[in-house]
Image (cartoon, rainbow, N blue to C red):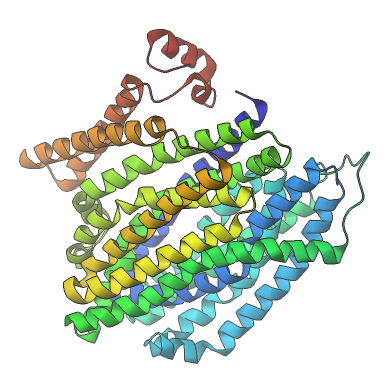
Length: 533
């Protein structure tokens, strides 16, 4: 394994482990919050969070990628003094944009609430507005570190942000003890956690970058840096298309929120039923669906600077190796999550959420979970295209997917109710994945290894999920409770999945290097014929 490939995979693992911890903390925050504020409260929470997400994506979603790409290219091209200049310019630029958008959000809170058909959501929206400015500042610093292939600050940032969100849960619990039952007021407490988390995490990033003295200190033989105006122009030319690419899906989700609610009314639900149904869908189904992709997205974050450096210096074989490794890693995480969450949707929802969520969330999760694999690959394949400057191509494929999602949702939701929403999501991300794979071959000449990337993970995942379902059903039939029956089923899935990976020789000796004592273990397993060279 080359040093660059090993560094990439190490960075990917750091971010993946951090995201796993973030998801555990997030579950501690979001699941009790959903049960405390109920389906109607989650509707308020989601309305505010959806507007925040849209403005965040429009302002700064493309910033870390753009800054990381520029820093990495500056280092490769020996402009060694340029990265710090990029950081200063981008931080000032996007801090101003963040302040402007946060102010606009607060000033226009009442029209936004009316647009959401949720007049009392204005309090929740106001409380989440400061987070837009905070993430705008932190996004430039994250990109700076990522450009140096230093993933630890981003990982720590994510953990701090998630941990301080728990402040919001504490506020909700405290209000509950004081007898507060209004779902809107309780939702405001939950929303405050988002702003607290952003503040604490941004403060960490500012301290971290101010104390950093090692990165970029060796500037001997540096070529002249480009002018500030030229760098600002490049930053915007990279960040805006990437942000727009991300914004396509965020805008789509916002439009989807309006359309799904409206079409649920057309389907025949009363306004209060619409709020409760949609609240259950976003509070449980969507929350569970979003867990695995947040783990796999870190692979794309980690691989981008390596791909940029490899292709900028003409080392295409190194780039292709990293693409194969990252695709396999994403598939090995996403495929069992997709099939497992679909097959085990009933025990998962019943274990985590109160009975008010079950009727909507169990069947919708069963369908929506299949899209986890495609969402994960959309994120990764978009990074592949961005690494060779095909940002507009990624934007175009996102646009096609957005049109698919909105069209299918309009047709399906009014005819079959909330079950139409996950079908629209599946149509969206499947189409984007297929288009991205086509354009990657067209522009990069890269073919995904179908056996290691798709076929073997599907077989291994199907067998482990079948084992989990069988064990769960047997234990339930024996009279055990849901909680007792679920965890042996989960253990069975893990054991079967590990055995299948060895039996089908999915892993290689290079993959094993990432594990502690992995070189010796890899040599032993290769000798047994359980992994390939």
